[in-house]
Length: 455
Image 1 (tube, rainbow, N blue to C red):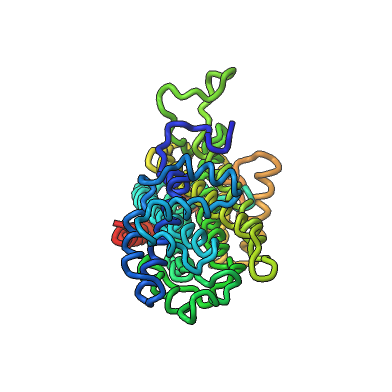
Image 2 (image 1 turned 135 degrees about the horizontal axis):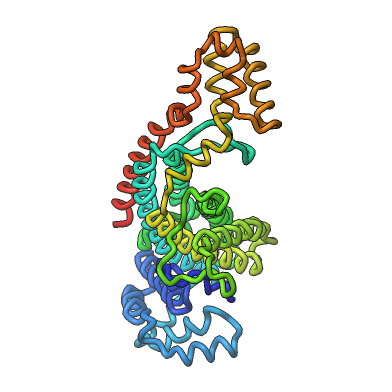
């Protein structure tokens, strides 16, 4: 199965792949050429009429794409045949002013970031949708008691909503990171062949700034062709975002196992889990998310490698960052829409959660018992008493409550009725419900802010 073909085929396409297809890439480059022409015309470097004609003809639907493709085959150059075709389409001598003074990377890197900006808007939208779904899930399950597990063992009771709150908390910080990096990421690079701007007759900084204004971008402080840290940062943040999603998917997948049975991702009618085992209800969505977020993390070293450019330009590094950016964004879109489906369709089984809470026969309440007894006999002595009872229950199989009940010190200090009540795990979930409710409200607030940004 190819990388483009996930195992679960029922999930919608968020549309990011289309933003990086050939025609979208070429049109982005042409959009940059138009901005360059207008900036140069304003600076008096080329005729204003030429810039206007370049804009009229810089539309891919006017291009003879067979001619461009053949030019690519002959020249082996990714941009030159496109500029040739633009020159051919322009009337008079206007085409001769296209691409004036620029080097290929000035156009292609800025064009790539135009594509990235469009994809970035999709990512922000999908994160908003996910946060809204998580808010509903956190609120709905904030009181559903579940075994809190540390080191894969029962620790103290919690609620399922508190788990969801953790995911929300991380995602909201990723939103902050995504928004904070935007001014660093979306910048024009226009420095000519070696970043010196010599071909722009002293207009370099002003041209770059004006191009940025026309494209809705900022301007690189130094237009070096080996500077990729701003794009690498974006891959790193996407990897962090996706890892949080993978963390949530991993938790759902684990809790979906027969031995837990506490939740289940949506399993549509007719879904087949196995060709040989008819009973299988496999966590397909979660597994796709986990595979995709693993791949995104594998792109991080590639993005870091792109920063190691030689001299004033290194084509290898631009290829690396192009691939890392586009692939990370494609996978991020897939991850977000799949996790949305998991969250909105998640089945939660509070009864099974309670069964699992009770599996230890009250051992999960050891902390609560120790603290209550500690108020009577001191914490350290109470720890020893409860520890000995807990270890005896774990090694002999005798009920924890029975061992505690026959301990004279425990019986005298707590009493049978109080002891029985203290073994109820639903009474010791602490701030879990409050945490879930607060994070649900935060998720809705952040989602609303994102929707204002992306429309």
